[in-house]
Image (cartoon, rainbow, N blue to C red; front, side, top):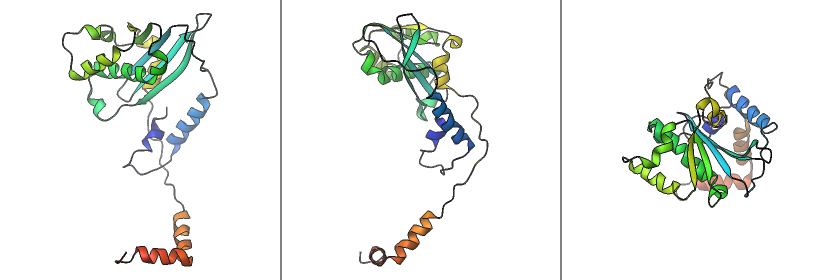
Length: 209
C-alpha cells in the first residue's frame, strides 16, 4: 500500500507527487480508521504469525486468539524487497519473510509460549531438516533457533492477511505531475537584498575563503 510513497524516498528518481501517491496516502489514512483494530498482546496466550513473500515485498502479522477463539491482530509488518533480494529463489524469499517476522515481533515472541508460523510455502515446514543448506539459510536457521515455534502450511487463499501485505497487482502509473515553486527563487532574492547575508555569500564565493 505504501510502496509508491517509499519510492519517493529513493535518492535517484526525481521527486514527483502524482495521483498514485495521493491514492496511497488516502488509502493509508482510511485503513487506520477501520477494522481490523489492533489489540494488546496477552502474555498468557500463545501467539501465531502469518507471513508471505512476493517479488515486490514481504509481509507478516502477529496474531492471538481472544477469549472467544477469534484471531485478533496485534501488529502488522511489511517492507519492499531489496534489489539483491529480488534474485532470491522463491523458497529463500519465503524464508526471508519468516525471518523478518521474527525480527519485527521479537519483543513479543522471544521467550513466549510455543507459537505457530503459518506460510503458504509448504517446503518451509521441513526447512530445518534439509541436508543441503546454503550459507544464507544456515545463518537464518541459527537465528530461528532462538525461538520456540512450529511452521504450518496454510494455502494462499487462506493466508490472505499476509498475502495482501506482500503484493499489490495494480501498480500502474496514472499520470505524473511536476511540482513547481517560486519559494527557492524568492529566498535567494531575499539573501541578496540582506546586507549581512550578501556579505556572507560574497565571502563564501571568494577564492580566499
